[in-house]
Image (cartoon, rainbow, N blue to C red; front, side, top):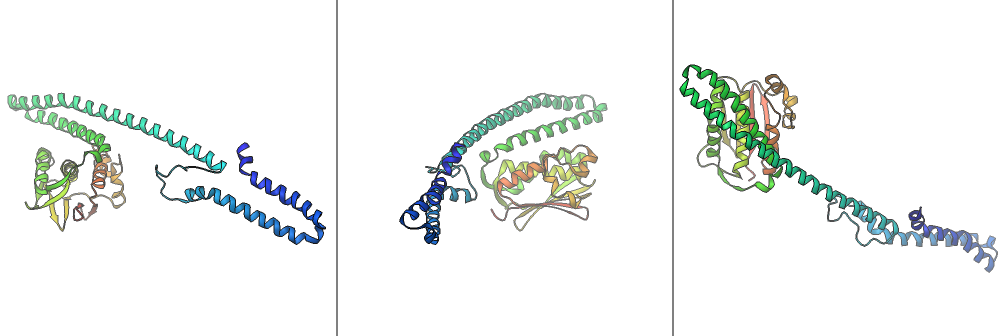
Length: 325
């Protein structure tokens, strides 16, 4: 109530002067009835002067409220004049301070979660590596149980893949701080990823075929681009047709990864990049996590590499455009 009265004090004063003061003054000088038009003229002049005065005092807040794209630098009103401006500025300072404190709490909590995930994954990887070593040893010692050990190895590989994906997802929140843009031999990074996935390609009976030349270099981050290609090639193997090839080529500044097999429905093309969305095939196979293509989208968007996913006539193509870098 006090703020309302302070903000409208000028109107109250004008009202008292116009409605009470002016008629008395005019009546004392001459009969008020003979100067009614003059009274209206003076009342309008006084109102105009008051509105101009209020506009000048509040010009800053009007301009501030009309600004678009406010950020932390121009969020607050500096040197407020009117009472309502002062109250508004105080509230905005409080909100800004509260927001900063909550942001710090969120960053601290996020950092703690990342450390916990990272430590947990690394702790799980140690016994997993021991299990994989035992599998390889027992395969040599007991050839008769080779197939059984292969089944165990397959499940270990799934666990290892999921742990790596979880670790990558956790680290992706600090993606910008971890970038190192440099010229990269596209053929070498594709070969590295294909070698890492060699056993998986054999298991899925899908084989990579690269036509990328030695002299092709792109500007990107080697580590994160490798994560993208690893995810795309593993998806191509997982959903590819048996006894087919995954074609990896580079044309007109674009890296294309193509695989034969049941395509992605048009209604799901855009949704497959959403976090935890597995799609029709993912629900049928039951092994999809809905994280992989989300990471691909996040990494490529951060690296400013345009991309496109298309699926027609039982062929799925993922394109990454390097022509702009």
